[in-house]
Length: 264
Image (cartoon, rainbow, N blue to C red; front, side, top):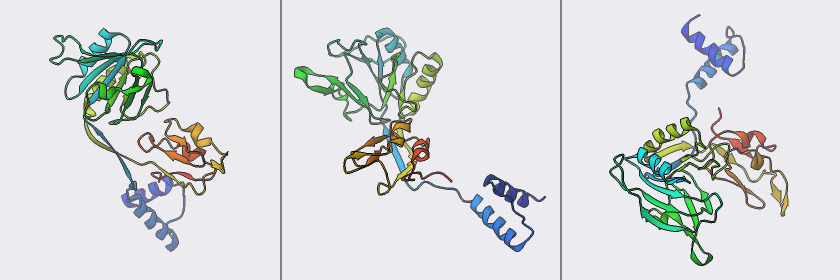
């Protein structure tokens, strides 16, 4: 069998088709399949992340958190936040930690409870309690001009974000030394601009989630492992930054309102 015929059969087999190619119709089908196999399916939209390398390391023990922070090194800039598991330690203003021979730079250390952590690579928002019952933005307190952290390394045994698929730029080794080592290796490379496909397509006109304030289908909401789908009352919203293309929402959707736009 020639290499051309072998490739035609490979394309046919990959699509689950077996058909004779020794007839005019069969040859036409084989030619069309070969042409389809040479076409690269490109996504119709891209999602962009931009990171300046502002890293927040969250932990409970200062020495351990500083040790990790200093291993990160250039080109990232690291701040450490020490949080209380009981969530009652008063918020303390930033202070520079003493330097060691492991780094030429001071590491900013802050402490107190964290009320909320959300976002993804380049856009992590961290909220802490402020005075007089008002919340404050941790990036602002830390003096970051961008008003956000780009990357979060969560050293807590019980990570602040609990999802099957964690946001891009969020690392939570949860006591796993191998996972921590991988995070320390990967984080310095997350500086710059990055792109990924927008994996989903949502047709709200045929979505069965809700009508007239009555909740209907919630399959994709319950199934999404990345927490990217939110209810807006009578409609749904999908966060393209959080969606990682697992395809679970599209698979769970009974009306095909949610579709995987990158599937071939």
